[in-house]
Image 1 (cartoon, rainbow, N blue to C red):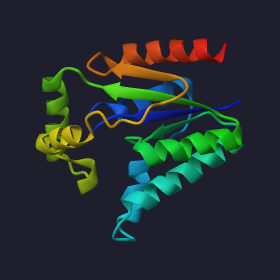
Image 2: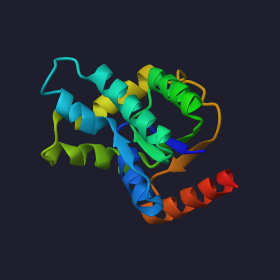
Image 3: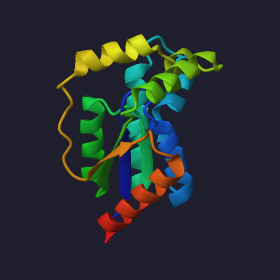
Length: 173
């Protein structure tokens, strides 16, 4: 039975960093919603929703091939529900890795450093926008059923990947 890891977390919490490092460590493909949105933004005005739909379809295909896969997105409620359905359809185990950076100074620095990079606009945000988003969604997180690990991403990535990989190995046995 294949595994579907769904990354979850606010901008700048380390989802993509952990997803890529875990991908290299476990040799599992990553399907990144932002890669899809980068392409769709040039083709349509409102690419957000369709990019999540395409992501779910690509994930589904990998799972049907029997591959374990990592899905990199913030994992809003509807996307989580879609991935629950994909996992049920394909017989995959859905595992949520939720990234949190409790050190607000580190988190803020990550968000602000993106401003100086040559990234598409949807990859960057301001610290004020992150705080406003957190306030809007406070207490509204959908409950995650099934395996769910909260990761403190203020820790070094290499150690996190080892810890997550050990946790995944325990789930698989």
